[in-house]
Length: 639
Ligand code: NFS
Ligand code: SF4
Image (cartoon, rainbow, N blue to C red; front, side, top):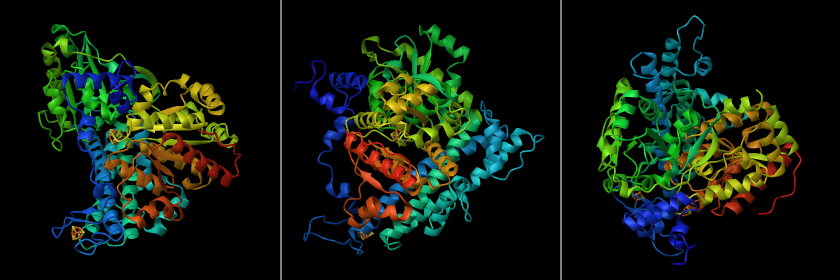
């Protein structure tokens, strides 16, 4: 293999990120298999699965539908057609994704409740203004005489109620423009209780219940809306109340944030309840003294995936990498402990940690892992447990083998923490400067580029390729999740990155001192993007589907991403996916998602793996919306 002199082609094909390339070479030299090797070993992947054509929903099966014309079975044993099977499978992905986000939201509500009752250790209410605003939305008395704890308890209970609510619609859906709400009502997809919508998916997809692909997909949209405007939004809002609403700050990204001479502790997973406390515990003087005793110069906490994003946007805690880098972080040999909670955590981590002195520590009663030490986390004793975890990491520093340590150099600075509140502040308190820039065409539109990594796509290539193309075309990018981490690593979150933008966007960014790519947080924080779109649409007196905006998930992999895609489209936002969802085996379902949905919810999906072609699709869509709004349209910027 030729390669570039430094790395063989095989490694260059796997990732565009230099730190990842360095670590992939290390992995190979040390003989440690990674996600990419397992992906290769899995080839060819099952064609029925890829097309969504297999069903195991009852024990007359498993059934699989032949995709070949005139050959093989066209119906399952029960008579289910390809479209029915594809729709049911897609719905179950949405249910799992919506459940994951929403259960995260429920856990945050639980923490808020315990904090309000004085039963949680170490947590406080950090954003009282937001708490009161939420209380007002829920119709809770916010009289100045009322103790904050009392308001917080009622808000937590009101949020709790949203999960099991049997009647009426979710409170935060009221944030959507009136036209959007009316449309959801007319279609019968206005979400009721969050749990209810998820349960209804499981019911409808049980053998012999809902066998109409369109009716099924509509329920999928409803459950997804319960995630975006329900569970995820609750997670975001209540996290802001407890941990503070993010404000712009500088921070570092990539594996180079790990320190050779310090105790390195990685937080990986999703819920800030844990990572916030680990950050607090890592500053404990006693533990710092203990670290010094073992010869460490300090304690570095760094994040992976969205729990990393949570502490990144709130405290500027460095982020070590995105989804596909989780094993590589351990292969640096410099990690004393990786602490995980829930979601996106490879079951392979224990084996990788086992090649080094590294301890993998699981903390959630919901998520245990092979090879992990379980130190269960409870909010009631949060700080104490967090200290125990940090102490475990510190104690482990002695066992680090310097000969095994190899930390790549790369770490990139960037500006993070653009909550809607922070964006408004940067704009001087009103949306108008942004809207004026959109109206004049200086900014053509806005695109949310979000989502995971997936070894089906060269790591970070889909993300960075698309984001760079969009800003070059004067399209402002807002980002969350693993895309945001990719952008941070690639330097796109520096205000200087405005130099890569088209002249219009560049001028706006330079005037405001912000980067052309705004890091808005974790994946549940895509709810912030919904809030921003609703606010823009309400200001202009139009529906979200009228706006020159789009969504994209260039390297998505998780079921959460399926739920996100569904609620984004159901909210009226055109969405381009970089990896193909398992629906192509159902022609009717595919047509509905990529064409018919436009007439139903005013938005649809497209699938395009090539980031340049995806940028073309998005620019065309944005121009089309501009024409409809009577805004000036510049000539297409060719790829
Ligand atoms: Ni989102 Fe964030 Fe990353 Fe994908 Fe996983 S960490 S919650 S699911 S992989 S973007
Ligand atoms: Fe087969 Fe129908 Fe049972 Fe699915 S529900 S496994 S298609 S018989």
